[in-house]
Length: 461
Image (cartoon, rainbow, N blue to C red; front, side, top):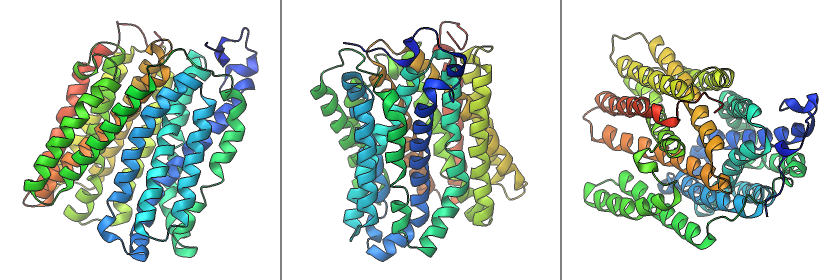
């Protein structure tokens, strides 16, 4: 049985016509609060992890504190997508928020690096639920006209954590200790649940989802395969790394096909193309983003503060691109917006190739990454809207989960391939340039595939 969601009520009042009005106010506050908390935690962990590893004595396990989060996140996204279709939004939202809080508490009290890695896995599972539910709720809990604005607000919820999160985490870590970086986030998810729960209860099951066993098994195999692929890419010797990565890919690819909409791997028009393009977008952007600090610091000799400015410029421009997309959605064809976004990402990445040369002006790095940020802001929101608009009835959760999976896997591939290329290069500069050139090619491929997003309809179609 499908229950009525918010936008199906007849005759919304003028106060309900905006995301901060009437029935949407508490839902909007709850979603943005949980997204902000998750964003702060994701950005803050990198700042305090060196001190954490030094105190717990687990430097050899340092990388797994991030890998455990990512792998559990993959699994959580898939399970949450199925749960939304089966049970509605409220139960998975409470479950994901609870898991996130438990992970934060365990991390804040962790006696060893192994316990911290376990806590990060629990956090990743909860974060996977949260991200999947947030997209699905935007699609089901708001009228079509308000979805672009909510997507823009969701991007904005990363700005303050992006600007202040690392510095605030550093201050908390220096003043109170690294454990309080985790513990300070604990109150946010319960408050978000209290705000959003009344509206989420109205978003019941969407229909008859696929059987749980098949999706959960596929999610487990995908997680296992992605873990082996990640370990293989990071292995110190090709003798170990190549077979491990190949085995991981062999396990992950069939599972991925089961979890994605039919036609995704060939970018079939409409929903499958949007899911596929989201993977290419994240691969191209984050594949370069991970090496921008290395290009400016290790190659050009700049301070951490200067390299941070480039990343901040990209974050702010990403948000600006999201708001531009929200403003253009009813006037400009979505395939044109997405193609422009991919093109800007390629242009900005080409600027990073140029700034590696010692004669290039350093400000080019800041300007280039701002252009790239504008590009991903335009394209990311466009792909999200296509999925929300074209998800088949009863499969909103599964469709938004596929979108999130594509984004995560694209990020993992982009950064993993970059690590291999840079490590194999005779010096960091040429390695960064070669990898960035490859990511420019990925972005241009995305621009060429952008016309497959729709049937020539405008952004609201």
